[in-house]
Length: 275
Image 1 (cartoon, rainbow, N blue to C red):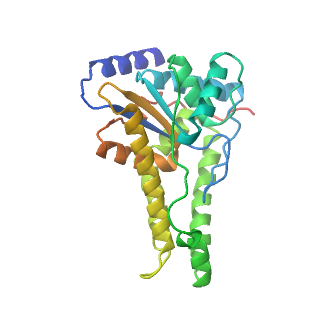
Image 2 (cartoon, one colour):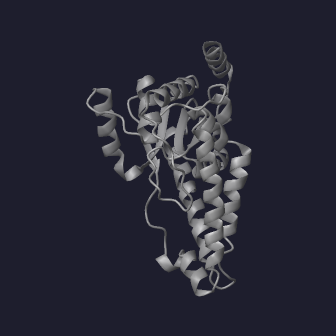
């Protein structure tokens, strides 16, 4: 069944003709549980044999889209360190960590025998001062700190429920959920709530959301620079919060943006995996 599906995917890609560069953005949870966001997933160990088989199946499906670039959430200023890691992995001197850069990005690039993995993230300081973006401080000063507490609690409750469900379904289904229109709409709603954390004179919430959009515009611009020529085909692996913006900005920058979920392995029956 998987072989037939992969063959169909490859034939469909091969017969498609477009002068536009191709971009598939794969939104993922942070497999290594960095916990740097307002709302954080708690991903179970992806290094177990069962989860590793699922990742291999996922990467095989992504390879069927025939990318000649794999781009990851790694700062452009640190491309050299990513090159070193990739070279060590290709030479058998590096064991993959649980991070999605390794598990999906490096693994996919090696499967395709690509010369490098592209670092396209932007992590520099936004213009202005910290206070320009500190909506938490503003809310506290204006007696509205409960609004941030509610947003965080609502988001974490929903994320925790998804984490519980994920323990009983394969990784491809985690990603199908995170790249669905329903998840995108919910994720967008959080940013729009944050954008109202301010007033007509000083709105650090709107400034923070604006900086988030600016960051993703820079990332999309980096993608365009490294893989924006006709015939280029890119799989970009990023935290799920980035994915929809990168798709939108990628479209605006001239990419043929793929339907991510159509490239994932077919859904399978949910079941609880033994730990």
